[in-house]
Length: 429
Ligand code: PMP
Image 1 (cartoon, rainbow, N blue to C red):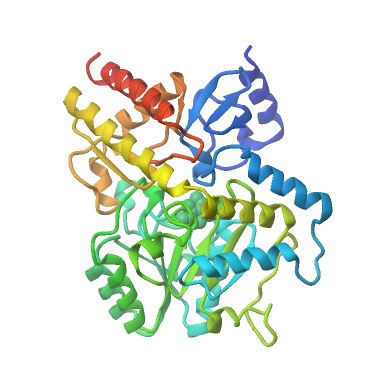
Image 2 (image 1 turned 135 degrees about the vertical axis):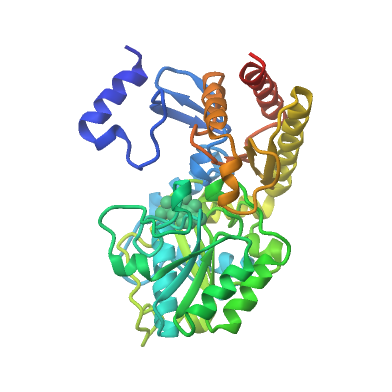
């Protein structure tokens, strides 16, 4: 028995399914024992070039020496107090408010789900309204406010589709589901629920379904509709934030939401997340004297996450992190397009910056429904075969890939050679 298989058997004894997040199972199962830069290693000693990037956080590379050193330095002198604030929190909050346009003030928590929960509850308090708009296909975390209509089966698109048993009916029914890139649908929803919608939450680029780009004018349209209907606009930048620009995708798009949620690439894989926004809104949280919206968490602002985030943002400030990952992203996308052309494969290579997704369909998807055109079977087989040949990307339908600052031109060249041989096998066996 391999070490992977043996450890997996053990893992299944002590954890249901052997994994600690619902979609971490890969077939065959991998147990990872080491991550270094662009590479990850399983318990059998096999090395992979990693594009999973832990679903997005790993923007500098695994176990990044500068980030690790800063974390170790921090925890040798400080940790967590449960009272007052820390020098690390002050420094990180200042950095975020300097870089992220919508961020006049910020609060730290531990995960993206916590951040979206806090942001949504805040909008209900501010507006005195109950309803929330989200988009079919977008993911904002595991809690009841948002865990509906994520990767719905095709017959459930736009219908009442809770993502979990045990959710509160009231929560499900107060979350309305619209179609991404369809301003008419959103306007109609606002009209039909006049005076009831507290906020609209959106991944400015829905990376939960690969890389579906907002069409020109869409994000601006959301901004206008929210303002016109007295609702708050929440950009969930848990993936796009810091990965696409140190100021988030809002900086790239030039559209400023009322509130922003952040996480993932904020700290290169260390656990920390944030909710940020206009001062007048943020001061409704009860961290502010007189604030009436509960905000708490034993581990909020822990030295590990705050030090890691400061170090990650320092790297972005001082080194050409985005220039590098954007250049390699473009090299990867154009390389893959060339392969498709040579092999006569009908596919659409989508992406932005360091992220790319190959859809096995003819044209650009504009929303979740369009992804019915994607050849899911080919997509999953393709990714499984890439793993066999040492390129790691989750073999799930419509998931994105991430390039980090540790990936090199050589890694991209190797990846392209392997992609070409895998596609050759799959489509011209
Ligand atoms: N929002 C978005 C856009 C996400 O991609 C995720 C995680 N994939 C979350 C929120 C939830 O973050 P977490 O898993 O840290 O709770």
